[in-house]
Length: 349
Ligand SMILES: C[S@@+](CC[C@H](N)C(=O)[O-])C[C@H]1O[C@@H](n2cnc3c(N)ncnc32)[C@H](O)[C@@H]1O
Image (tube, rainbow, N blue to C red; front, side, top):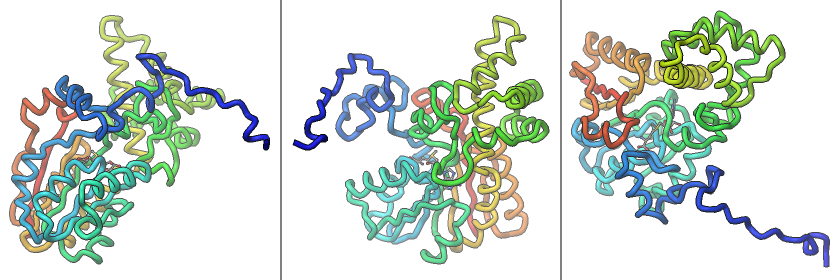
């Protein structure tokens, strides 16, 4: 017998009724196999782990007015929830392109959609940034409809190995595409006080940005490694100890959320990528083509609004949303992640 065969093989350990590891924790991670569990989680107003619930689907479809035979782009594939709805509208005629920067989730979503019968004859999935929309249209030609649902998916937030949430221990990464660029931990190693202060203030309107930036820089100067989500959370907690006890826990929670968001926007160049996408949109749209963009914080919404207004004044868009559309009260109460969403749209002249 070879060495390999002699090795004692440990029996897979039973995790108990409350397993702790993320991958063991939720049956819903395999949503197709556990439809009943998924349904129960949704009924309670939560998002099943490993899944993403698409937001403003009805409002988006009403505006895009997709007809069979058209060509469109879902710029943010994610879990493929919106993509699936757009494909249904095409009714096997026309073509849908879909892009996402996430090298981990994209192949899973592509496979899931293929299993549902949407293969390359109707759907082309590309692992690329939506700022490269001109490369998509050089293949597809002018697009009749475009959707972008910005930010992160629930699968990304819920996976502790990706470091998107302060609520779970993991490496401080926060990259949408972990195979490219610099993690948030690496970014913090070389950042100046002024830059960090500006990042927390501009990307997340963090009211305690001065104190938190000073604490982070001083920890780094003393040689403290800020390599994990909990290490960053601890610094924020220690910095905000001065807050009155009655508000402290809640304020710390909000500051953690905002600081993580600011770092995520920075390491993924989210504002720059969105700006480039918005600038290229008019050339990507066919005459009468429609674009809908769903944003999740004021910085993003401002960029979309300004761009739509400018191109409208220049006569490039014939119509734009006068007000952002908000998800219904029913959707917000059934999915807390919908609460900050704003939908804006434009029609190419
Ligand atoms: C809110 S999720 C989309 C969810 C999707 N609409 C659904 O229904 O499942 C946002 C997705 O956009 C991707 N993303 C964010 N910025 C991007 C960019 N600049 N280019 C391409 N994909 C991007 C993220 O990786 C994430 O998967």
